[in-house]
Length: 133
Image 1: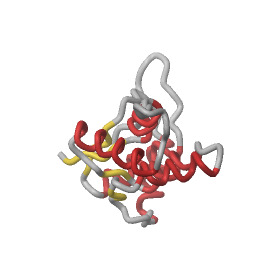
Image 2: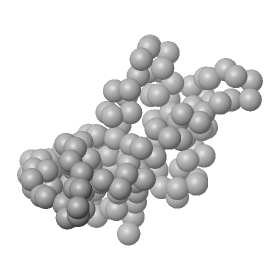
Image 3: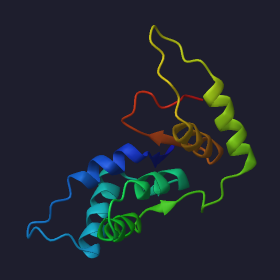
């Protein structure tokens, strides 16, 4: 199955961005993203992943670097979150996970899963709490 990267994959990778000369540039950020794409064998993300990553920016410079980092990625849903995605996310939010200590389901994770499901992609994540279908 094709894979879409979850936000945590991008955040962990982005936090390790330390250019040899110590100067972070948009070109360096794009190249750094290319390394993740090559390693993970996918360039696919969905709109909520893009927005989550941008939502963590603290300054104008950080935003510019984050936008440059995101450029090599392909936004699979092209910014179109459909009513059926919201319906599926609602279903996932309401689902009670099994286990002795079920974790809460976050709206954004449920929406990422819903969009990926619609587009026949697996969510490639390090988050054990990512909702299942």
